[in-house]
Image (cartoon, rainbow, N blue to C red; front, side, top):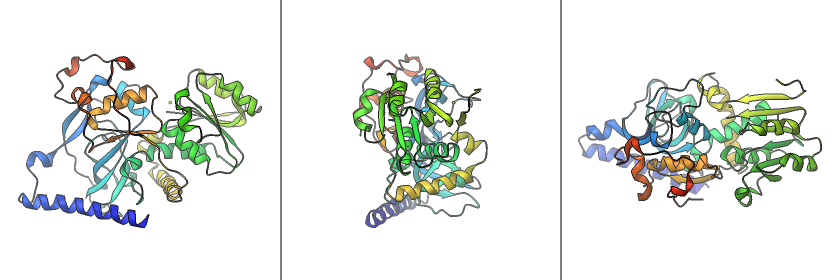
Amino acid sequence: MAKEGAQRAEETEQMIDKEGGREAAEGGSLRAGDAKEMRAVVLSAFGGLNKLRVSKKAMPEPQEGELKIRVKACGLNFIDLMVRQGNIDNPPKTPLVPGFECSGIVEALGDSVKGFEIGDRVMAFVNYNAWAEVVCTPVEFVYRIPDDMNFSEAAAFPMNFVTAYMMLFEVANLREGMSVLVHSAGGGVGQAVAQLCSTIPNVTVFGTASSFKHEAIKNSVTHLFDRNADYVQEVKRISADGVDIVLDCLCGENTGKGLSLLKPLGTYILYGELYEENKVIAGFSLLNLLFKQNRGGLIKGVMDKLLHLYNSKKIKPVVDSLWALEEVKEAMQRIHDRGNIGKLILDVEKAPTPLMANDSTETSEAGEEEEDHEGDNENKERMPFIQ
C-alpha cells in the first residue's frame, strides 16, 4: 500500500511539473484561449436529455477560502436527474453546470486557505458546477484522498457514504442487533448502507432491488427481494415484528409498505425527498446540510470516520461504470433505467465512444431539435460498461 501511495504521489508531482514546464516553454503562461476556457456539461434548460451539451465555459479562479481543483472524475446521482428536470425546490436558473461531487488535483489556493498544497489529490462537494474540467469550492468541502483510492472511487465516495452514514448513525442510531430495510440496494447509497451495516455486529439487512441485479449484490445484504414482488410478507416471514429502520428513496406505494414493516419506536427515513403511531419518520438531505444549513464541520467529522473505515478495509466505493463528459446523456439514461450497480462516474479524461459523442456536444447536427426518448431503450446505442 505504501508503495502504491508513493507511486501515486510521484505521478501527481510529474503531472504538475509537466504542466509547469509547458507554461515556461510558452513564455510563462498558456495560450489565452487555453488558460481561460474549459470543457463542461451545460444544462441549457430544464427538461429531457437533449438539454445537455458539452460546451466551452470560462475557467473559474478561487476566491478567498476556496481551492481550485483540476477535475479527474465526477459522481452522478439521482438528484442530478431531478435537477435536470427541474423537479426540486427552488431550482437554480439555467443555463447551469450540474454536479455536486468530484475528485481531482489541487491546482491553486485562494487567500487564507491552509492545510492543502498544490498537487494534493482531493475529493470535494461542490454546490453545482462539478461536471467540468475545473471547479472551485470552499476548503471546508474538500478532503484528501487516501493513497490507495483512485479518482473514480473518490468521486463515488462523498455523497453515497456520507448520506448512508448520516442516516444510519446520526438519524436512526443504528446499534448492534438491529434490522434495516433499504430500497434500491444495488444503487450507490444502497451499497454504502450495506457496507456500513456490516461494520456493526449482528445487523440484519433486508434489501430490495430489480431481479437482474440480485446475482451481483446478493452477498452484500442478509436477505434480498425483488422490488416488484410482495416483499412485505417475505420480510415478516423472517422477522415477524418487522424492522427497526427503513431507508426509502422510492416513496409512492413503498412508503405504506415500509411503514407497515416498521417496529414501534422504529425510524423511517425518506431521502432523495403525520402519523399517529409510535414511529418516527425523518427526512434527510445532505445538500441542504452542506450548502443551506452550514453544517460543513459536522460533515467533516463524518468524512473523517468514513475514511478511517476505508483505510481499515471495511468499506469501499462500488463503481458501476465510467463515462466521458460527452456521454453524460447515456449515463443519465442508465440511472433513469435503474440499470446501475453502484456509482456512475464521469471520467473527464476518457475519450467518448464515437457512436455516442455527437449528440452530447455543442456541435451536434441534431441540436436542440432532437427528440427526447428518455426511457426508450430500443432506439439507443449502449456503451460497453466498465464493471
